[in-house]
Image: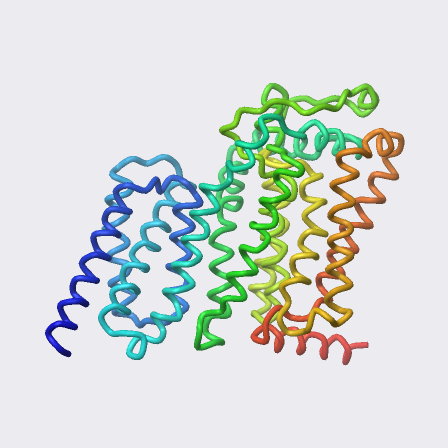
Length: 410
């Protein structure tokens, strides 16, 4: 190695160490999007299979960062887990960056394959966190009453009922907090599951995880909702209007403090959980089961915490169908199995926004009608999304094997 090259690589590593140290001291690792956003890099580091010695080194660095981050202040298990994952992720990014800066892409292909997506995931997750309040700047008033009224048309308020269960059992709240915040880790876990199947970074998966966020942010301004926890704090989760008096409710936009993000319709948490599950087709059965568990847990978490109404989740199902169909790479968009579900998902998604805004006086006349629409839309979107072609070629083998097994069993 030439002296000048060695000096430049040493300088690069020193700068990375300084940047990591500054991050450990300045970033608020109690924030789940920060801690888990960085923590995803640790999963990608493990998936790169760097060996026992390097894993031990990253673990040691992670302990050092955790000591600086926590500083002896214990604020609960969920927050502690966020901080530890953040410390391990920061250590992983530092090690991968230094390994690549010192050895180069040719000598460190595994580090290169892990570092770029890990850094991109971290950057996009942090950017998403800081951009959540964009809709708040545009909309002082929200459509929470409209989403609340839609849920009431079903005969009860799911978020309020589940919120009562959660708040009456402290241990449930702890698990809900961890599973709700852990969606970011699940994104990284999905990428890690496929990382070893391609020599280069799988940018299609990065796109799959963040395209829904970009499109969703646009519709946060079309149908701005905060959730009952923020819009109706005097009532959630204790009490709500009974169905009998719901027709008397006057719907209007209501003011909500700008500090609360307008991120309700569609629910991106539910969209991400669904798309993670839909794209585990090439992974082992236990991974698919965990992903399905994530979907069910997310449905409970988003409602029980008061972050979302059931309306937000209902809209997320056709939205997920739309995004999944648009992002498939193993079939041309000109083929019917792609453009038709994309069209159907988009039409249902827009129809639900219209129903939520203008259909209350129609839906409140019949609980059966409201439930029929919800069931038909949700079941149809889910079944159609499950029949879509694989997102990327690396997912095709598992999907094809299951299809052959199902055909053989008939």
